[in-house]
Amino acid sequence: MSPLVPLDDPGDQRLADYVQLREVSLRRLLEEEHGLFIAEGDKVIRRAADAGFEPRSFLLAPRWLDSLQDVLAKWPDAPVYVVSEELAEQVTGFHVHRGALASYKRQPAVPLPELLTDDVRRIAIFDDIVDHTNVGAGFRAAAAMGVGLVLVTPTCADPLYRRSIKVSMGTVFQVPWTRLTSWPGDLSPLKDRGFLVAAMALTDDSITLDDLAARRDERLALIFGTEGHGLKPHVLDQADLTVRIPMAGGVDSLNVASSAAVAFYATRP
Image (cartoon, rainbow, N blue to C red; front, side, top):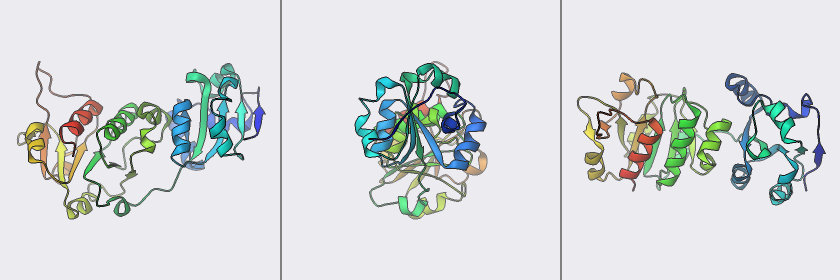
């Protein structure tokens, strides 16, 4: 069993991993410096542990000690900071859902060539998506619809930010993913492996999603752009074709996570 450490001082330095979880800029610096991410809620904590991530510590209200005992037992050297829900709110800056948090160590990024295995038939690429909720929802849709690999571009929001993980319901631990380092240059190895690269965009020469689905391409990579302006011209130039979702009611676009879910379902292998 992990050592239980009751704490009652919100300024205790042992709680530094959990400070001001809503301050995105602060959290990005802290998490990059220490190589950590935060899991919120008992289900997400458990899914991170099941995926093999090593915890740095746990921050739990007393009522979670019994139900998470098997997770805590798996990592006997990780301290368990036992706090009131009021103290957790003071430290984190918001009301912690259900009073359960954990700080996990990030794992090294896997190079793209190692992820392009023969069984990957569908790839999602999230380009410059800045909203962590949309990133998390995109991962959840990818997991649900059988997408084998998710790639995020250098300017895309962090899939391991607390909000992304929570919205994804931990599926960010389930779907293989990595961050690209050369964009859109990293499309070349996908094309070399036989992937058709389709950009979701409203262009004059775009085909409908129905037309794309009817092609039944063996290997398909779908690119989704930022919430405001979509995909940049130099990215569209590198795609094999552009695709639009036919819509009614005068609506010209969907939320990017909704678009991703529709596209993943329509083109599922």
